[in-house]
Length: 85
Image (cartoon, rainbow, N blue to C red; front, top):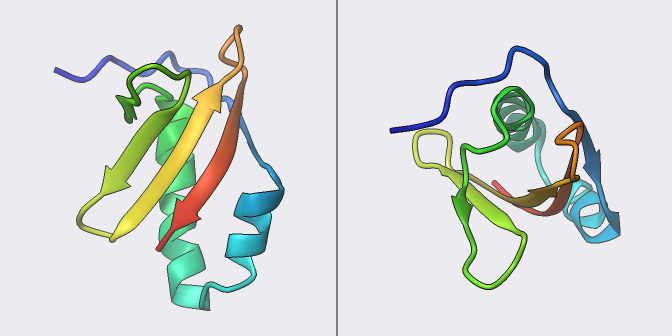
């Protein structure tokens, strides 16, 4: 069962590798990724834990999007390390 969203969105920030990947996406792929980013900002626990790390791996099979990210300690910022669309 998925955890309930807190009602407060986290701020999504992308690090350099993710920003570089963004430049290679089409407008349609960017739109799909935006929807995934919003979903993660509302409920940062959507993704599954990557064992042995602080990372989470979120894959939306319908939109064909994958995002690897981690949350700051206070869960106010979600840092995206990798995107795939």
